[in-house]
Amino acid sequence: MIMASAGTETLNDAVYQGTPGSDEATDRKIGSLRTLALDCLEDMKAEETIEIDLMGRTSLADTMIITSGRSQRHVGAIADRILQDMKTKGLGSARVEGLPACDWVLIDAGDIIVHIFRPEVRGFYNLEKMWGADRPSADLSGTAGAK
Image (tube, rainbow, N blue to C red; front, side, top):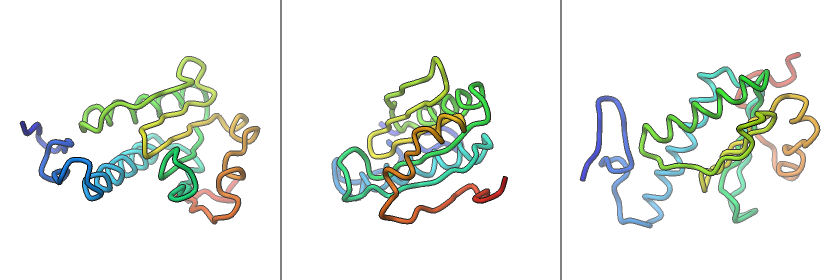
């Protein structure tokens, strides 16, 4: 069954076809999740977004994205947008922690993990230092060092 609507790709579209469970199909899904998350973060004006490549470092995920929202409401809105877009594009559902308080929301989509923090909470936990210590990470927001 092919599910598609105008301008929307789903996992059932030809773009995602391949042998189920194959590396090619998995790579496409990971790429789609990564692109979706980064696009949502940019659209929602998330701040200080970085991406850390975890490939070969842990079995938790292949990519970790860390970003900040300006307030609890902003953090919640960013998380809601990512989750809604995942559902709309047929990329499945993710495990989510922290939505009621919105100080730190974790979205675990399997191969991609997205952490959305309020700035004070992000500074306290400093995940960038823990996970990115031996590898440089790219600042995707263009606001590095800008204060």
